[in-house]
Image (cartoon, rainbow, N blue to C red; front, side, top):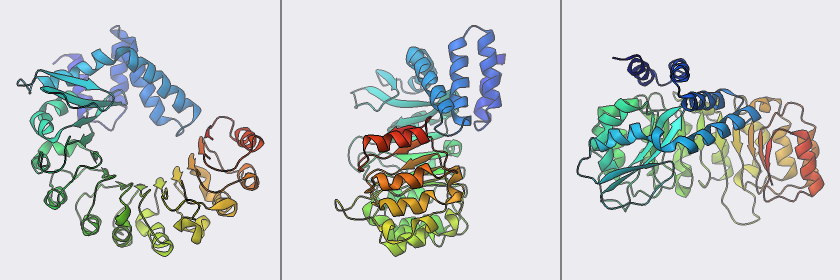
Length: 390
């Protein structure tokens, strides 16, 4: 085994560690591949920096420029790993964006994470055939399964039988996949996802009893992230599940577009399993002009802020006082990303935001409110290094 092969093997064997990646970056510099070395360091810097801050944004931008310049050769490793196992296909097309199905051409969406391909989007039937090769080629920890037509085209059960799933930290299902009850049952019974941290099922019809069984059981012991955006009927099931899941430690929760009444939402937000939540998305899709369920309970006291880095309240229509109750909480000091789009705000809320000494925002979304140009200028003055969406 060469030095390069040994370093890459160490990266695959320790995918959560940055040190093997940085050692490989030094080796690349010494062997004339400065762009790839800089790319690895930039992506790691973006992850390690203050979330959404100037340093993180600049590092991400630099990494993006390097990737755009070198995309084809840097995709070659994953492309060759897939092509070698699919000799009956004409070719393999790897890109950073979703692509339409082409006859006899395998479409792969690949995303680099901390310098290497860490995520792939594949058709289930393709993934079953190439799983061994792609995990041997790259430190992949995230997978999205995408069927191109409705349910019945390709069953998902064979995917859940693969031992290679033990490498995954994140599993996504593309929107509108038509997942059947039998497929949900197979996912719940999968023995190879013990390391899974994030489960993404947005815009897929999820049976509420299945969520109760998922969170109430002992399976998926490392599960920390639940992404259920735009599944309107899931509210009662989620409240039932999360209020009983005291053995869970949920750090990322996206329930934007899920319908809640105020009291059940209060019960959900005060669940024991959400005490350490770091990302909370509560976007509300209701009647235009109507207040969201969070406006009928005191958001300043029911949201668990202590470790919260990302908070999205799009469409809750909390008004000036409701948002004031939030930003006055000293426990919001960890908050870096705040979404206040469509919250019926005007210049009256500015004193709460600009006078809050503990707020250290790097991103603020205030679209769809009633701020004057001078009000926007006040926000930019208060957070000069932040991205402010207006």
